[in-house]
Image: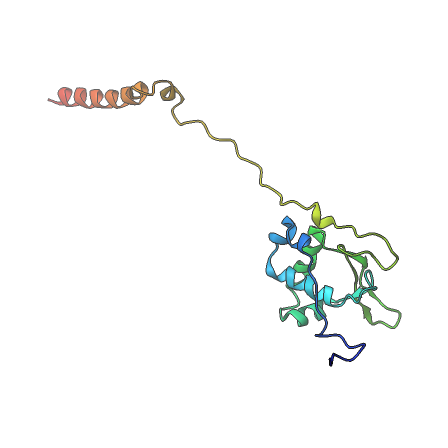
Length: 171
């Protein structure tokens, strides 16, 4: 039987998104842009560099084929929902060249063997506060469901009576 040579793996590298993560409310309600950014970040993970993942906004925008001004909201949404955490913020190096942020993927243990935070499991969509229901316009009419509103009718009757009295006075 001829098999594949030892040491060779079938296929190329791949990104694995776990089922339990996809089933969370945080992932299910997320827009496609931040999802694509998470996959781009996960592609940079090599099995032991969590917390040392470099990805600048410009590189991320180029990888996702979007404008660099829109990528900041993608990073913010991933942080807000608990998928990533900032390990080291960006800074200007000693030679004047900027150094990109270092990111931590919350679903995996970090390089220094700290357990995964998995904050995305606890994330819930913020619900808008309920508004109080307004009472009916004619509170006094609600009590008398079968009969028409007396005050509303009396107002029309008064107008009609005053119009009739005006006509008779004019004659």
